[in-house]
Amino acid sequence: MSAANTLSGCLALVLMCATSLSGQEPGPADQAVTRLVDDAERGAFVVSVGPMEIPHAVGHQGGHTGIFPPVATVQIPRDAHLYGFDLEIVDGAGRRLSNRLLHHLNVIDPGHRELFLPISRRLLALGSETGAQVMPRLLFGLTVKAGQPLVISVMLHNPTDEHYASVELRLFLRYVPDRRPWPLFSVYPFHLDVGFPAGDKSFDLPPGESSRSYEASPAVAGRLIVVGGHLHELATSLKLEDVTVGKVIWEGQAIAGPDGTIGGVTIGRLYKRLGVKIRPDHTYRVSVSYDNPTGDTIAAGGMGVVAGVFMPAEDDDWPLADTKDPLYELDRQHFMREVSGTYSQLVGVKQEPAPPAKPAAHVHES
Image 1: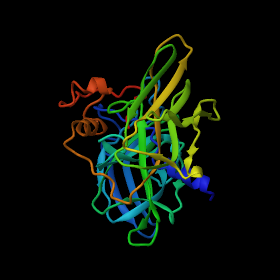
Image 2: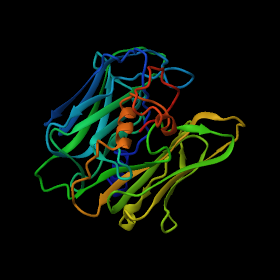
Image 3: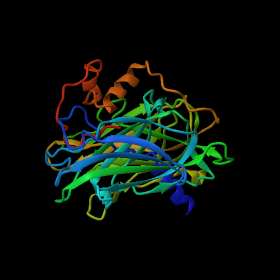
């Protein structure tokens, strides 16, 4: 496998296109149980979620409701270095089902902070199109420790006319055991979202041209190795800039999928120039632009996030999260589905859980 492919896989380990909503009515996945077991022979931690009933024609569009197993916390059973993942969905008879049933799966590390914000670190996100990904395990790995908690948040939907019974989702986190001489480098995920600092990340698109942005500084110095992103239909640009020196680090363009919709975003393989240095005394901006020709406002039609792989300048432990930070707590309540809404809406209710409500259509959290 080429360096381009393996480091693109590294990006896929951390790129987030995530949807998760608070307070739902009882659903077909409420009794699902999430477990993590160590399959040492395979060299993988296996996260399983199920069983679940997946009724036909259930989705997030057209007012339909997605399928939300309870948000769950599991623990890493041994020290290891993650280098890849794979996913499968099976029914009660063990029949392999299409990954189209997955809308998203998020893995969140509540014990460590994000690079650009004092909120829980996002380790991994998958969508139906992600596919298996690996990094070169001799070179790169994401260190995890025995007893480390991971929060698992899943949404499924069913764009088909078939009903599926006793469905189980399985995520395989491939690892190298600790105390081996590899991997040589520790790398970490990062993301910077125009919807920061907390809350739902999608936003309404007004008619015509519009843009959104967010600025922040990193907690530690290092190099950006790979950069990619996520945006929605009608987007015209997604940028990451060093505001301090007035330099564009990366600008992504939408990649058309086979059905004419957005199938992805171009990837910045910054390792070709030994990465791009970032510094805590600089300010960085993510910005996204849209052009909506419909003449109407599109509810929750916009999103813009840059994500990728970061290599710290020093081989120190990643900064721990300050669980007493108000922003950390607000973010925690949001990804645990205790509250919902945009940041401006959440600020007024951050100490009180939101009342039960049906999930809205395609509202993103990460």
